[in-house]
Image 1 (cartoon, helix red, strand yellow):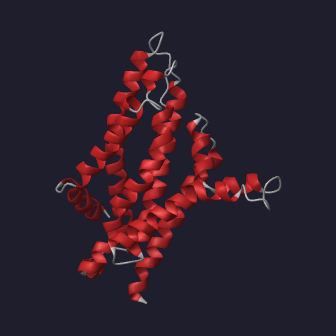
Image 2: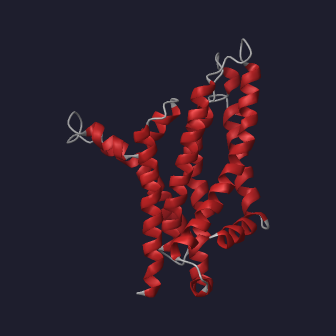
Image 3: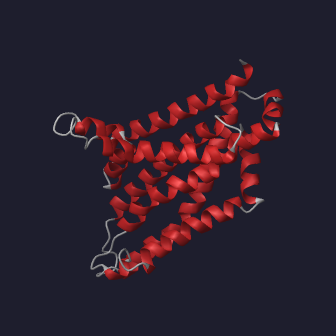
Length: 243
């Protein structure tokens, strides 16, 4: 697994992929938090990072599929997936190596956002008038959300040789699992009956819960289950070449 992990990390940072991902993420967040008048924290009367954790899932919904779309699609297109199969590696090792490499890239993208925390901390009146516990919970929720999107993206990439198709499919799955169930719950047949149950199936419900600073084990189990499910589906998808 480590060899795959090292190979992917080297691929990210020896090309422009890693730097573009981190740069785009930080630029968009910076514009939302400090430039756009409707969302700028400078126009609010209280210190908060709600804008960061509100817009980050939407950015991840497009950014993470762009990172994962090449993971297996490119390997299948160039034929290098067959070389991996000849190595003494299990399919699970290959999937986990690519998964953790993508997680590290997203962590590198999130680390500079701590400067936003410091900035808002200093701008508070009095200084430090900030709910640090809720912010920590939001960061944990954002990391779990990113890992879920990465697992979904790897699965989508394993289904096709075309990177564009992998990107579109991954973006759709991320959007549907994040917001789709929330929209479905508002359908006339579900409102007032099982709308709350349907909302609990979606990622958005559990991300919002953790973002309030409440680390409920049910939310953590949900995210772990989604991650494990899509890693397993990716492994099964890779095993198709042996069938």
